[in-house]
Image (cartoon, rainbow, N blue to C red; front, side):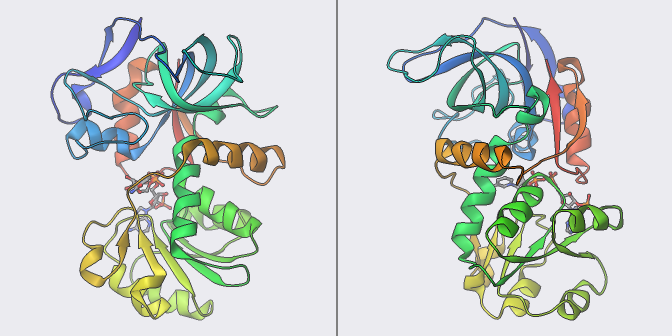
Length: 303
Ligand SMILES: NC(=O)c1ccc[n+]([C@@H]2O[C@H](COP(=O)([O-])OP(=O)(O)OC[C@H]3O[C@@H](n4cnc5c(N)ncnc54)[C@H](OP(=O)(O)O)[C@@H]3O)[C@@H](O)[C@H]2O)c1
């Protein structure tokens, strides 16, 4: 089969489309014929050598070179591992696995795709929904309160905004000028980041809790706006603990997140748009575009 692989850590040009042995579903796993793989920033962070440690679902032994790429995928089950129940060959599923930029991949967590969702769309949900649910829980925001989201138009931001609104939380999001209407369409109050952003947020009202999704060096301001470091969580700023702010980096239950995603998508309460699709051979371009830092929703590799 074909898979995207890299032999050394580095820029997007280390990615190659190569012939590889097909993986097989071990106990508790399924194999899918991949139809689409989501492109997440963690994919290029791993490729650059920034993330070498464990991922609870997919990288129990760390990164071994040459390595494959990709966590999220959607496709058709074609092997069911020992001990797995409730899923059959031929089922359309989406979930998290290992080396998903490939013709076949093994998933450790999956759910049947909701009716009406394309493979291309489905591949964009697993990681962003797990992350969004985790950080909304960790920041402790309640219905009726206001949540500020810095960097709200990307994959995780799009999920946070919609899940928070569904729970009756008022949301203020920051994004670039081109994404203001997008944020409003997701039910948020919107303003731009950059010079003067703190004052613009203040004019929109008090903030009870805040999430930093962009890692753009705003932790001090988020603490000022919420009044306490305990009401701020970041997923992108490793310097946040200096301010007493929690860095959230350990994934929660992916099966539980997928079940919630299916429910929200089926009820029309959650939609992550696909910014652009790429072929397996275009994986380097997908990474360059993601690294440029202005993805609306999710980029996807279509197999
Ligand atoms: N720790 C964890 O568990 C975890 C989990 C998932 C993701 N992450 C990390 O979280 C970050 C976000 O992930 P993602 O998938 O949502 O990324 P993404 O889809 O690439 O979105 C990035 C967003 O950041 C916005 N942005 C760029 N510069 C900004 C600035 N100066 N201020 C505010 N917003 C800005 C962009 O908005 P505009 O286009 O409107 O400019 C873009 O929509 C990444 O760094 C990723 O590695 C961490």
